Image (cartoon, rainbow, N blue to C red; front, side, top):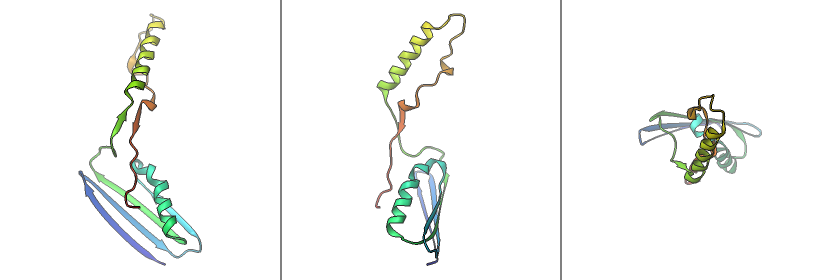
Length: 123
């Protein structure tokens, strides 16, 4: 079982190229290289491949060029962000007046923002 496949897709100014190489191997050995923006898809890719292929050494490489935007939409939990802001204001009021308060140096909790999860369709 030796093979090579290459797929290319362009959408919304983004080009994604996927290459899959396989060679005969006694067991299933999957290697996946993804751009950081797609790293959350690693488990899904492995699950899809292991559900269809039972042995062999597979190398999957995905590259992305074009639009520098992010994948999917970013959702804002407005209520949570407002609570963080309220606590920040409270902290500013209660801290020493001698130090200048810098809102920019305080980080809003990362859980106030989250990416909407996308799934690989058709598998």
